[in-house]
View 1 (cartoon, rainbow, N blue to C red):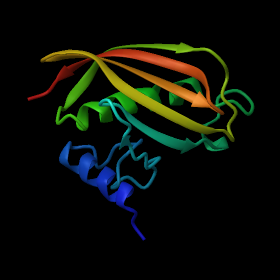
View 2 (cartoon, helix red, strand yellow):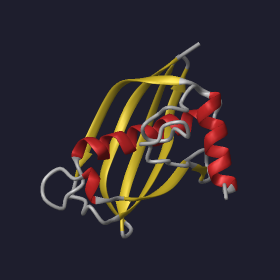
View 3 (cartoon, rainbow, N blue to C red):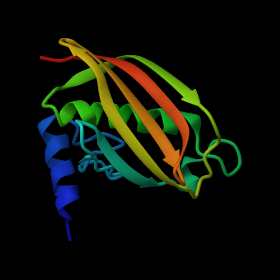
Length: 142
């Protein structure tokens, strides 16, 4: 059964040429199937269950996966505003390691928008504590 959130994510991804995305694509069998929902004040959020297949060092979520999760959240924040954009600059700050079995919450929002340039921030939480954050500049497509 496809949930409304999953249906919305598939529509957002397909409409924005992301159906094969490794993080949110519904046409990619290896996708993490992330589904971002509006979280108020123009933000988006999702929950993701980490697992050992995404490990870096022993029992710790790979830093590149964390960066990708944060980047995807910011991308979807723009999708929810009807904007397609590519990451031009990404700064990630890791505050704590993330266990491979953690339930991870991710939230992203726009800091400033002066098309074609958009600045965003995303934060990644485990058990309510921020463990990583990112700020990025995105360049609007089309």
